[in-house]
Image 1 (cartoon, rainbow, N blue to C red):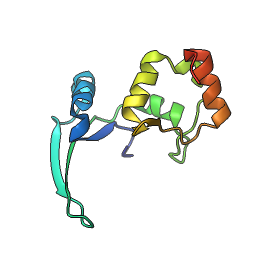
Image 2 (spheres, rainbow, N blue to C red):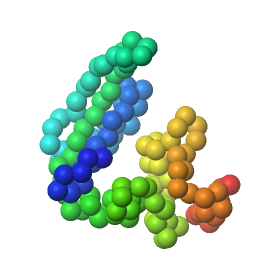
Image 3 (cartoon, rainbow, N blue to C red):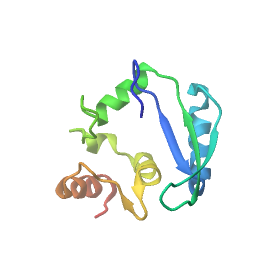
Image 4 (cartoon, helix red, strand yellow):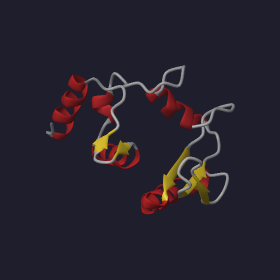
Length: 126
């Protein structure tokens, strides 16, 4: 995410997640400053070619509101106190698709106990 006078949404995915990114673009395209961008570049160390697809939204106050729920003033991800109210099935699905690593959810600022509690209460998981 980039910080200008507010927050905008930037999503970059590899070609392997093309269908997911196209889905997100369908949702956000009326808020975007450009069409989907396709980028190929090589990694300096390996020389491997990487293909990315991305889009950037315009800066909007409503994005600032969502950002302030999940990030503190330093830009660090936080867990909202009411995460159990915010995390609904569709949210869990997007979290798994957008912020996961291989087969694991990215849980940077969750304590193990907090994560287990939310997954048990909301989804009967864990």
